[in-house]
Image (tube, rainbow, N blue to C red):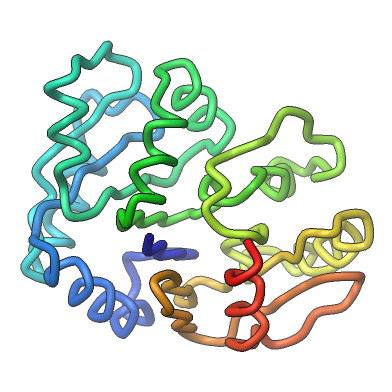
Length: 226
């Protein structure tokens, strides 16, 4: 399993991570499936991502709508892709759609069977979406039934640079949860899996009320014990 955890994607600072991810996907093929977080009737974001991936020699050729009942053939097409892209958007709604469509468990199983999953706001790949509450001014501690894909053994918080209050809120939350939190500014991210721990930029690892630079060895240790 390989997971690519982005805080953002359409900015120049992401180019080193983009190139590395593209090389990993191209080693398996060039087709990427796209799971939309919500309704996208005009497919504006899909087409934007298609152009983006095309610049790296990749083909975003399958739009998967969780609100439309999909048969085995369509699901099979999705899981025959070299990688699957999970879009940004409202994380809670995305999780609800994955559950209601029956795709949450299917996606988890596919990912763990050596899949490549890309998240541009990768909270869904975590054990819980609790930290997403900060984007609406709520507390992660108040989140109930936030269990998500659980592909990595920590929580992930993107867009750390968007609000100076996010770091202090994460520090407080880290005192009430045993799960470490990895926080990224836009332009930062990680690629993990199959022995890989590749850090782009200077993400923070937050736990027990303290923040420090994300350390490759500590992340590798967490992954080995997951």
